[in-house]
Length: 113
Length: 118
Image (tube, rainbow over all chains, first blue to last red; front, top):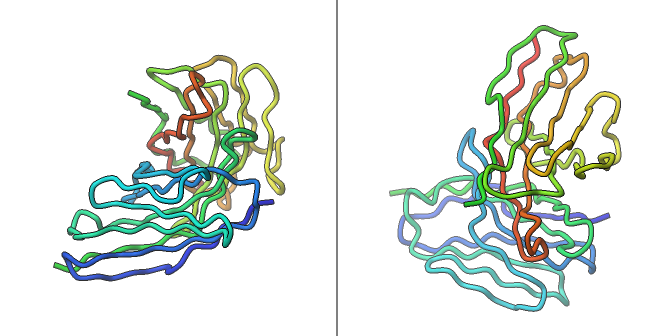
């Protein structure tokens, strides 16, 4: 089955700097890669996703890149703000098949003012 | 749009009690819902895939007789933790996908249920 590895587990950056979180996956059949943001005790919220027919996607300060050959994808947050502090999860899934997602271990991002 | 409601949000009960958690899609229909468990400071672990009108598909290591799932309508799935014990204490979260053009729809999560077994 699919296995998703996420790094780093914790990340601390100064406000205004960029943050990068990386994930690798094992199943070449996976074709959908969402990123979720979860604040303490709350639901995961989708912040951006990418499908395997696209190499990069951007939404304001957030971007995701995908390298299918190497089976890795990354989340980039630019101009970080204190409200970006949260736990971020990457996931991989087969969007057209079982539709289930396998999540990475999570990254606790702290933005220092 | 795409709101998933989960109830209750918090449950505290004695060991041996069975607890039912509801997951509803409020403004869309979902043929498939997913149940996850999340222990403190850990990731979301998929427990089972709930299929409307048919049996749920359980992940390896998840006891189907312990975690009963019913998906009787296109907007409601329930998870019943039977004879709960302290080790079942966790944060349970459901998610659902809009069946309309479902291949292009993300999973939307409920607010989760924090279950504490004394």
